[in-house]
Image (cartoon, rainbow, N blue to C red; front, side):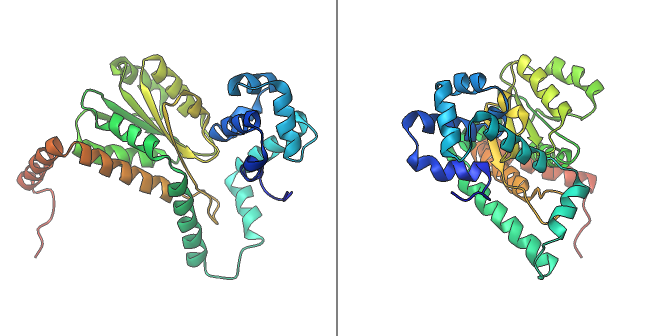
Length: 289
């Protein structure tokens, strides 16, 4: 087994050689990666429905002495994922190819899109879109320091498609009024990629207490908010930059919007026509010469 491969890659590569219980355990870890394996061995075994010895055997098949050795390596990988932007830049800049940044960045973005679209579960995506299209549910959205812009973009366009869509601020003092209006069955769309933010997790937990259904758009290592989400859509975000790329998140958002529009077109068509009339009356856009 390639010792330079990530733990996630090693686990996926080993799937064919695992017993039924070990595959069940590995699938649970990968579905909730890496959060599932950061706790005790007893917690992991109980959550995945296997025995403690099964956890140990899986770790050994992956090339580790046991669970503590496996967990130490996993924590090292997690720490590397969450390094500061400055340290991240220092790490990749030393060995970059000699090609132009436009090509290198484009290659990374295309690879991210291919990997993201290849791993998105169609049933999960469709279920999330159905929630967002349900007129009986109000929709709320929020993001973190970087992903707030994605949440704002989502809300701006979703307001054109259907009513009762609200952008939540990252400021915690604005949450109580929003939560006051949040009812059971409403939908909270959460955007959270590494480095995961406590404020996002806190609001997610509060919304779930209100009975909201959470749709989480995150990266492939999964935000801690995934533990509270009904639907999780994970994206690949690595790029030759001090910051991760959000292009795959943007494509996912626009595809979700298109799916919701298709599901609600009978009502959305009239809504869009009325919106265009209002834009025309207010002379909002410049006329073409």
